[in-house]
Length: 304
Image 1: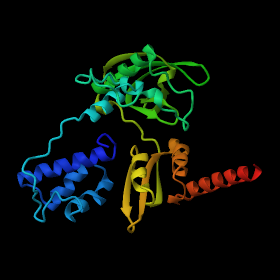
Image 2: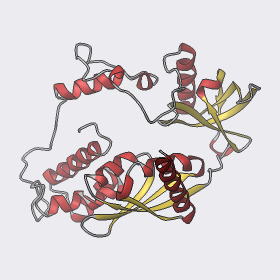
Image 3: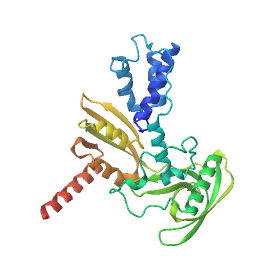
Image 4: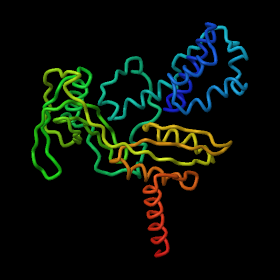
C-alpha cells in the first residue's frame, strides 16, 4: 500500500509531521498545514484526528513524539518488486524512467496478468517507436516551454498542421489513449497522440504570449455511505479530480467533484460503478441522466 495514490500520501504526510515533532517545532496549526502540503484536502478529516485521539499512538498531547529519531524507511524487497512491475508498463516506459538498482529484482507481476473489461479495445500502441518519439518530444517541449509544430490527421482523414504551445499530456483510462492538450490562436486544441504524424520542437514561448482558455468546468455533489470501504475506494477512484470531502456523520460523507464538461459521460459511468452507496445530489441534469440509464438497464433486464 506504500505506492497507493491514497496511502502513499498518508505515509508522506505522517512522516513529515513526525519530522517536525522530533525537532520540537510541531503545533496544531503546523500539523494542519503539513497535511495540506503533503496529502489530499480530505485527508484533514482523517490524519489529524487519528494522530491526536490516540488511534495512531505517534504524538503526545503537547505535539511531541515518543520517537527518538525522524522516520526513515529504505525500500523493502516487496517495494522494489512493485517498482520493477510498474516499469514494465509500456505507458510508464514512455517517460523513460531509470531502473537503476532494480536490475536483479523480479517484478511482482507482469502486464499480461491483467484483463481489462471496462475500456475500449482500440487503445494506443505504446510500444510503437514513432509514438514513443513523439511522446518524448512533446514532454521535452513542455519542460523547456517551447513551441511545437504538430502535423496530424483528423477524424475524417484530413491532414492538419499547427504551431502550438503544449499545455499538458492527458491519459484516458477508459479509451487507453494519451492526448495532447494544447492551444492554437488562444483556443484549446486536443490531439490524440496516435493521430500525430510528426512533431518538431521550435523556439521558446513567453509567459505573456499565450493563455489557454479553460474548458468549461462543472461541479457535481454526491452523498456517499461508507459501506465496504466505499470512502477509501471513492478517494482512489476519483483521485485524478479536484474535490472536497465533508463528513456528515459517522458513515456518510458529502463529496464535491470538479470535472471538465467533455468528461461528463466518463464521470457518469464511474459513479454508476459504485451502486447504491453513492447518490448524486446535484446538478439535476446528472441526476436525470443516471435515472434514465438505470431505467434503460431495468427495461433490458425485463426483456430477458
